[in-house]
Length: 192
Image 1 (spheres, rainbow, N blue to C red):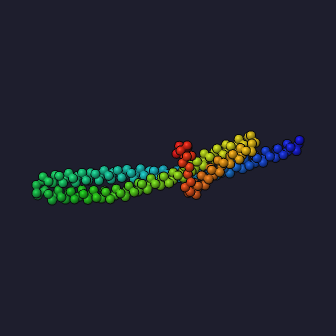
Image 2: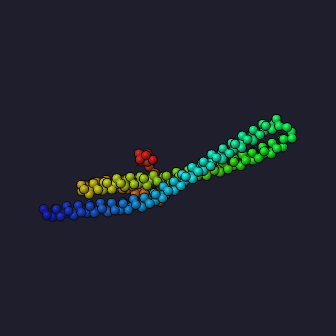
Image 3: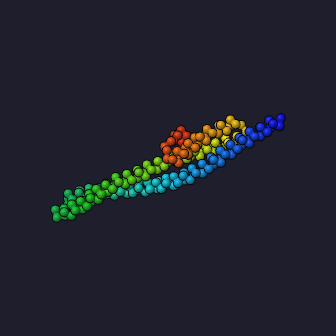
């Protein structure tokens, strides 16, 4: 009887040791992922701010373009009924506003491309942010299952806890290494 209790105690001790090791390793891994995720979030915020600024500048340039075009059109209409001696002055002003319109039009395309670039960068970073979010959620579930395993001493729970552990580590490593592994279903379930 004493032998069976000793074997049972050794088995419990071994299971609890494995649970403790897994929790310690996962907590360390979560900490490493958290640092990288925070850096990604900062980059996303910078890209978003730059995107907003670029789109605002795009709108300002577009307004300037429309103003220059409207002014040139208005001057052309006015020049039709202007005295002959004023026509050169009108033509000079019309040319000036058409030049401004051309300049704004060229700059508009550049600014739009720049703004879209910031948007694309944001989306690229968001993929990795989602990976870290999925990793956090799955590893939290795994740690909870490991805790229940330690309390109940059910070995099958340890095996069950390894499933979210595997996927949580997979998404964390993908985020750390920059791999494009993503679960749209999980992201939708988590609201991303």
